[in-house]
Length: 71
Image 1 (tube, rainbow, N blue to C red):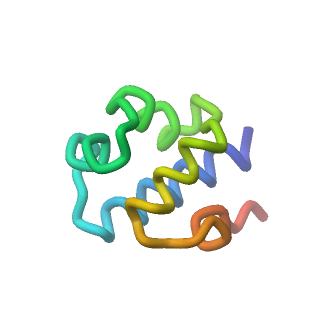
Image 2: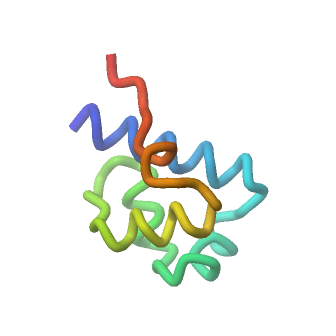
Image 3: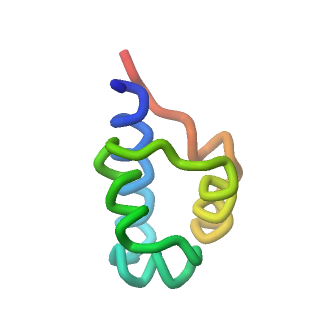
């Protein structure tokens, strides 16, 4: 649970740093806004395909997307 929350917060931070709202990011990734909300809040587990879409929209590789400090 802690790791899922950390991943979601990291994705949200990267999205915000890229100057995307959740709505514009949903359009850029093809993932519903509700699903993005669930991922960023740590409630939902993102599918691998969702992580790939998110990484592509952020122009990041998967490693940069999943590097979180969970200590």
